[in-house]
Amino acid sequence: MASGPCTLKLFDIVAGASGLAEGSYRQATEIDRQLSSAVSTCFSQQTFVTAAQVRYAAPVSFDSRRTAYFTRESIGRWFGLAIFAGMTLRTALAMPSLDGPVVAILRWALLTVLFALFTAAYLRRPKASALASRPVEVLLPLLVVTLPTFQAGGAQIALHLAQDTPALRSTIRYALQPLGSGIGNIASLAGMAIGEAFAIYSMLYLGRSFSIFAEARRLVASGPYRLVRHPLYLGEMVAIWSYTLAYPSRWSLSVITLFTALQCWRAKVEERKLADNFADYAALKAQTGFMWPKLPG
Image 1 (cartoon, one colour):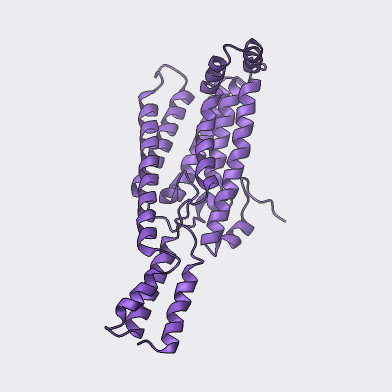
Image 2: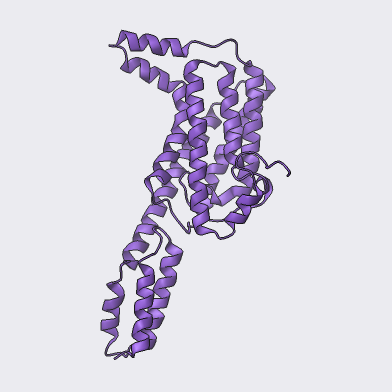
């Protein structure tokens, strides 16, 4: 039979497991190791079954948590891999004419490389120390990723759905009317190229820690991340705003404004995830800007 102190130690570890963060495989593994050590030390061979019963009566089911972790990790990996592999292929096949503007060819090459880096990150990324566990950590990123497509495709869908409502259809057509001449095609392509080049630069440092959903893998504090906490999102927003301003309309400006607001919210959600899993994140946050470098003083 186990001694009193050993029994108390075992139940202390089990009680600690009740506060385990959802999706934290690293913490689950450590508590599982502590329990195994306590059981082996404190219980004789005759009473080991009783100890095992106490262990598996813990508030956390270790085997089920580990299985759920690997299932969610695999689903996230293959989901992201399928999306970005498809986008890489689609972009690569949409090569502009070599007789067109040089900036158009440059922008196409940069976008292809960026999507290829996203794909490579999903192929090579390590397991997360904390997966996305709250609805906002999954649904918000999905909304942000798909929202830019509503600048063109969303308008056509809205017109189709409103075909039996003349007043609504007229309002949508009004929102789609161009607002002036915009910044022009060449300036727009140049802005997109600059944004995508900066996003590529950021991805070279973020690397295998990249994810669509809010997850924690590795704290990156080098390259552009020494100055800005979300340089990848900054590059993406520069590119998308440059595209929008080529031929702006009330519709496209509304969509891109909503995209910008949701992207900033998404970044805040990710910051909370990182702060919960990396003790050094608070210091990094104090030294860097959100989307733009901190001004001295």
